[in-house]
Structure formats: C-alpha cells, structure tokens
Length: 346
Image (cartoon, rainbow, N blue to C red):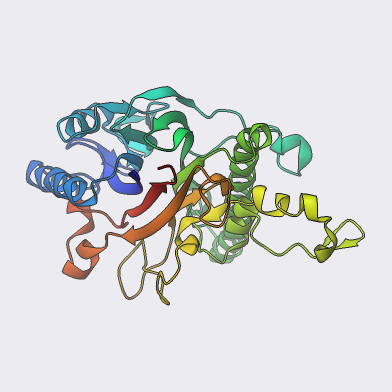
C-alpha cells in the first residue's frame, strides 16, 4: 500500500526584507538575519513533515518561495494570483495569497475565481468574492488516482474599524458611539464572508462528488474558525439531519442510505480513531491558542466508506515551535496539519 502525506501550512507573512505587512513600521518587516532564520526554519520543517502536497497561506514573495520549495523537493508550485499592495505605498502588502506545492505534477492548477452560485441562492451580494483567491488543482496521487485539491485562507477574524473615520470626529461621544457601530457592522461582514466562503467551497466539492460519488477531494486551509463553529458545519454538513422533508431521519430507504455520507465532508482529524481527547492548537500556542487549520476530505477518503479510493490513516500537528517559544516571525504563528492518506489497493 502507498502512503501520501498532505499538509496545510500558514507561513506567517512570507514577505522578503523591504516588504512591510499592512503598515510601514519596524516590527512589520524582516531584517535579513530574521528572514534567513525564517527560511531555515521552513527548510527544517519541510524535511520533518515529509509531505507530498502542501497548501500554503500568507504567501507574498512568491518567487522566493518557489525557489526554496524547488530546492527542497517540490518541483511543482502554483500561486493563483499576485499579492495586493497599497496603492499609496508599494512596499506595503495588504493581502497575501495562497499556493500549492507538490512532489507530483499538476494535471491542472488554476484560480478558483467563481463562487458556485452562492449569491443567487443566499442573501450574499452579487459582488461577493473570496477574500483570498483559492487554488483549484488536480494531482494524480500514487495509489489513489486523480485527486482535486483546494487551498484556502478564509476571511480573517476581527472587526476592523477605519481609524480615519473615527479621527475625523471631534466630539468624544461621537467617537465612542461610532466606533461601536462601525465595529458591529464590520463584525457582521467578516462572519458573513467566512460563511459564504465555506458555502462556496462546499458547492465546489459537490461539483466533483455529483459527478463521481467517491471522488477524492481535499481542502487544505486556514479557515479562521473553531471546529465547533457554524462556519465549519456549513462546509462539512456534519450537523445531524433530523428529517428529509417530512420523512424522519431514519426513514431513508436502504438503497439510498449511503448517500447521507456521500454528501458530507470530513474534518480529517475526526476520521482517525484514538486521535486523542484534546485536539492540538494550530494557532497562537500550546496553552492559549486555537484550532484554525484543517485538512478536510470527501467521502472518497473516509475509512468507513467501502468504496473509498484511499483513507485517512493519521493526522498530526507539528507544533514544536510553539513549545520551544520560537518568535513567530522566525517561524509561524500557525502549526501545520499533516494527514497521512493510505491507498486501499493491493
């Protein structure tokens, strides 16, 4: 049997010295020594993970990352779009990109620019687009076959208020009242954006699943939500269905019962028995962090599916840099998640 390892890794501002993240200040760029230390940490991590396919987030210096990965065993690399920079200061980046790196060639790799009908079927505006354009790639994995990959970085948490709006108000009462209102509305927008992104990705999974019920499809991403969040349940459809129309949940005719599993997606961590009672944090640290990073798979990789093309056998979180207290700018504020997928052939 063949094992294929897939991983997701948020690099934390992979931006070469001279590029600032979000604001021009000394703490928002790298010295050459810091940059070299960060790249060395990534090289060591790549060797330890030994992943075959990696989804990457917070990519700014795309050419440098491509060269680093090529030199360390990943000849196939794709970024869907260029990073965005401040129109008034081209050394400040305002939006990073995602990328995918692979040991195996891409059958296809393209930007996921559409949103699969979400605006017309929901209250989301027609101008809705992903906050960071995802990767949509197909790779022929050994022992598993053609597998569709999405790499995502969902809308960041946080309700950000424009300082200029508040600074333009002279009266302190106006400043305070306006801050709360602006923050409330910004909070609605960022929650709605992630929910819409989750719904759009679910619909993209369904493109493959509707054509082939056991198609292997994998999402590698920083989804900026907790596993118990409603956003993740929109993506996975893991919440219990209480009825099918007026028919009780247990009333599905036997020939169709398997379909209730086909149309769900699966957080890979939950597919592995005895994975552990406490889920490791993937963001912020061991003791006080959170879980934001995921490998999500279709039923075609579910160990309980008798028709599966492969199966999730192990999920690991590489968080040694949290325990070691490494500065996040010389490592990352995220820990990569690696899933081992085992072929089921002879």
